[in-house]
Image 1 (spheres, rainbow over the protein chains, first blue to last red):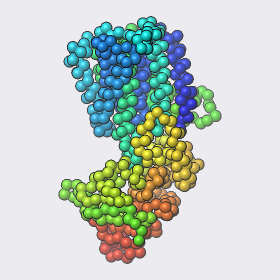
Image 2: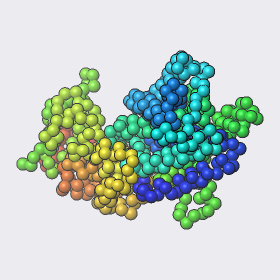
Image 3: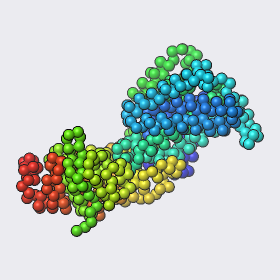
Image 4: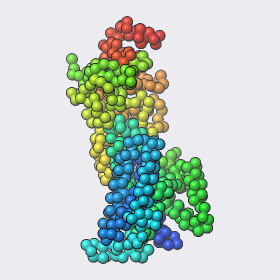
Length: 335
Length: 250
């Protein structure tokens, strides 16, 4: 079931992701909004690798996001790094913080693990808050440039236009999406699912489960760091809130509402929440309350998240010749 | 006599002042089925956990195939040829039977499964092993059933099958018939007897009829120590065993 041939990571949900990415700027009111959705979809997808596939509820995601934002912005402002080197710095910053936090937090399991990631998240926030000479503290890091796409100092494409920048982010998103599917269908990915299902058994058949969890953290951190770096480029600014606990919560809520254990669910989750925020915040300042209600509804009634709900609906409507899957998570894991 | 595969010398596990296992010298010869029995609290399970690496012994040594493995963590005992089953069924419940077995086969290669850029099917040998074991367990028809949907008896059989996937020299089975219905027990008995022809098996078991019918050697434990050891016929006749164990059972 988790033996997806190489060619098929290019089909199925990947085609749906491509379709979504092409349609979003057409349907949505602005390319900037679409870009924000893709950036948070990257972060949710990375969180999904930990929560949906490995079974680790990490509140560290905001730290990786913030580290990616700050580090890439700082090297662009002070050392005039180009676009790709700056993104690489963001990826490395996310991976490195994830390695440190992951390696320490997985020494405990269950609720203690969650509490450790929570503490790291609080610590990182206060570090960013108090080091205001570097991070700008409460004011945020201002005047972050958006360098053009260039190779060997030769400028190829300016990203100043919102639509062009959207295209750039969309290509990166699709690349990460395909790479994440490759990871999920690798021996490594199948072992992560095994650890989620039963860590004792995974250890008994020969896996050093800590190694696998740390690597899952590093991959998740790298993708989240990339998302953070892109967010800094989008806003031309790094707000302190990027590294707040609320960002971790935001990412987790997107992951859960979209559907854990399905990569497309992460896009769906990020899309719904960013859109909901955009529409509702103009109408009603207390809109995050509705977010709480949505989360409660999904957790209680839609265990597979929005994506799982859509799959159920499709099964019910089409009455396909194959019997409907009793458990959506099962089906999602096979994607 | 055949060679010794697993040997413990003076093995002990203490919790504070309580010696759950106290100076056990156990010797499991290659190619035999070796059963450890004893009344509740005799230290069988603690001994078993020390052998699998789940618990660290506080004294003594464990030698496996000539190597000292006393302090080796559980997951590093798989690649040298040890495999175990659990007393309480421990499977990947939501995954198919075949995927359960494939993961178990892949586990023997340990850290090589960290290759996150390769497709799973790049390592076909794991699927082949899974299919062989499926056939051996007579479960090919159930290959795509989620493990959690199997009957309890079949889950117990799969539990043993998972241990087989590591191509072990020594199979450690923790109460393989635990919780099995009376109708399923012959299935497990014949499976273990069958396995005994190719593997060395060490098991903990409560069901006396199984113990007496399949074991080559029986070790009787009581209060953390070995009381008697010998072939079934000898153990059955031993007075100390009767009073310590069989007598208690009535």
